[in-house]
Length: 206
Image (cartoon, rainbow, N blue to C red; front, side, top):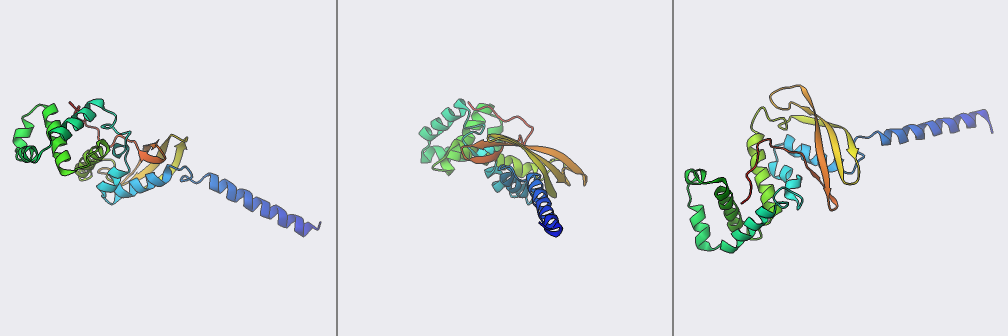
């Protein structure tokens, strides 16, 4: 074998090794990365519906679907739902609702949801609630997930859960880069963001 051929083989081998190493170092190699990418883009462009749909609250593993009390309240709302009841609940003024106990407020919200959505589900309600929260919070300049841009640095995890390390540009009320983590979980065959997006406590279902 000639010296030139040996050198050629060595060069090709080094190129292939470098390419293989480069592939292993790609931050988006983990299967959760694609959904994280879509979620961060949704936040960047203020698409709260898409962001909520990619969050675990829109799945059967969400907060509301995991609550036996909420499922009982949802079933109760389905049973009492009539045209007359829907009209009565819809006519209640916001100030009247605010004066009621939290359990009653939540039940009214559930009945309104059931009246509006014939095939109401716990995951659909969870998605609706998160969408409402994000709509308000993305308008707040101090909200860390109100971002101008983002960059995923790496994703660490296994087949069931993962953590996305991401740099947020223009997060909150600053132009600096914020280093954040985004929790992800797999529900069935689909990855969802499982990060707590809102710090305030949510009402307890009756």
